[in-house]
Image (cartoon, rainbow, N blue to C red; front, side, top):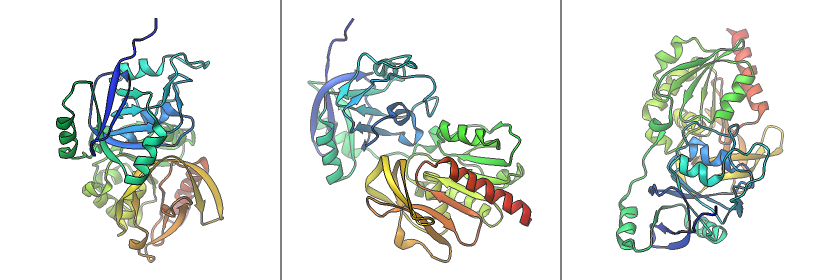
Length: 354
């Protein structure tokens, strides 16, 4: 039985209104409207905890064609605030398909809108930067909705997506303490496949507690929101740096930079989706998956402390760092397997030198 198409409005803080078709629930939240350029992997995008608090505009026109399956989740409890798409595929076709996109949105209580010219909306966001947005119904007081958007302050959601308790994933390899700011399940799987003996710790853990597990290395995970708000985490990293092997990804990369004296600023247009990155170590280009609104300020980097290892080809922003005094490095993008190998080699070298 086909659903009845109900109208829904997407309202932006600048007063812009886009009319489309309702999908998902009617749980209307205010979020940061960003566009994502991924051609595939929409399930991973919608369940990535780095997307917490965002209303995501998918630039690729058809979404939902593969449905939703149990294997491609990046978190157990998705924290995205809404989705905006052009065409919803109501009849998915994939051998792993278990439920439709709309059924997923209803089950997770996420609102969405379809039949939107997402490419025109993307151009608007590209030219003006990200905007606060929410959904509304026909007949709602739009002036009141716009005022709520203007008054709303974007919250730091790390405390809501981080692990509440410490837990372990036993392995036979090096012991890695993960400080969880909203880690993707796929990254956790990759570290597990490498055989690491894993301890997952809450985002606000102190250095003394981290050291009590005697880790061979510390992994700073990805996550949402503004890294400048995480003062305690920055201090923890500062304390760990002199005697700990550290790898950071996404938000973890930004926090490592802050702990090393650099500045991190809000981007006009964040990186969400596929982006080409140049490795300055071997002059090779890799196509990376990214999801961040903040970036390390290149001019603030003290060359005695940090060396830039990767840059984004589209805008020249910092995508990777190597510490010059301590055993630490980081990447802004979601890493390939070889980068985890680099982390392992660094831990092995540190043990040999000890």
